[in-house]
Amino acid sequence: MIIGIDASHANKVQRTGVEEYCFQIIQEFKKIIPSDVRVVLFSPTPLLSELSELPANWEIKILRWPFKKLWSQFRLAYELWHSPVDIYFSPGQLLPFFSPENSVVTVHDSAFEACPKAYNFWGRQYLKWMNRLIVKKAKLILTSTKFNKSELLRYYGHMFEEQKDLFGKIKVIPLAYNNKKFNLEQAAAINSFGQYILSVGRLEEKKNTKAIVEAFDLLKTKLTDLKLVLVGSPGAGYDQVKNAINSSEHKKDIIELGFVDNVVGILKSAQVFVFPSLYEGFGIPILEAMAVGVPVVVSDIEVFREVGGDAIIYSTNTQDMADKILRLISDVDFRQRQVGLSLELSKEFNWHKTACLSAQQLALLG
Image (tube, rainbow, N blue to C red; front, side, top):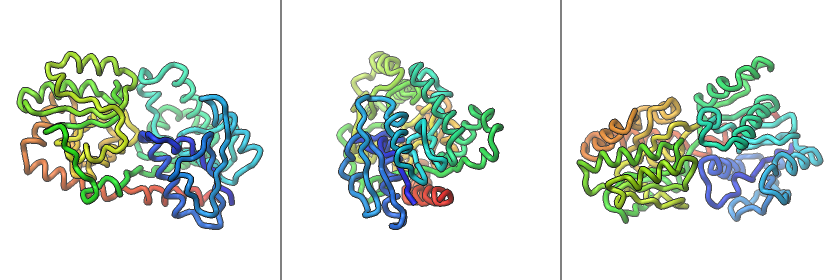
């Protein structure tokens, strides 16, 4: 049997959530896919060092493409037609024009449907078309939460009626975090900013970064030494974020670090991790914070309730966010309780478990 895997999203130096999943799932597959199964990784560029270290039954096919876009839809599609595989796995929510009957795709979210302003017009149309193609052609759809499954039904339910048991072909397999990196033993605190709250993620409207700045301004009336550290690159709606920062009376205490490759040390020494995103498919940074013993405040949305349960604190508006952050900083018993719950819950998530459950689903097609 031959399994083909799109490695293009995993092959990034700076990886966000989807790309981290793609990287980790491939790395774990290397440990668990039997030696009698041939695995082919497809990429438009040579693989990074860790990805390129392969078991004997694995190989790399570099499929060159002169353009920045549509590699999967043309070059990869041609390869899958010219040299068929038995099972094709796309961890990055893309399916080529031509793909094998046994195609498996991971759908990470439907944010472009729920938050259209976060995407440009043509990008949004392409993603909509891609999800329709996935729903129509994929033999199996993997997704990380029941919320994501319900969103697929919400936006593409009319297509489900055209196929038998389409609801059943969507399998929920939770994501995870790098527990070798994010843990109490290995994570070394880096405290260069004094007392601070931290947010990690794109600085944009969908991540609700502006609300973090507004909540921070409220906190400063009671915690005068507190700082706000923002880790992440600018995204859609960054102008609103920047205006909020520039308008703040406490601008000098708001620190933008941009993208940080190794955030674990900064995370571990934060007073509170804040992640009030308006829409997510999962939320890997939440698990990372919990695993290093930092209490978490998030927006009160369905997907966070599913992932975090009682281990994280939910806020409904900027004043509520500020009040709950203040309590986590000032109430030692409450803080310790939340940290204890978080540490226990974080133990339930690991990439090996995610990969094993995913590999089992692929094996059913073989």
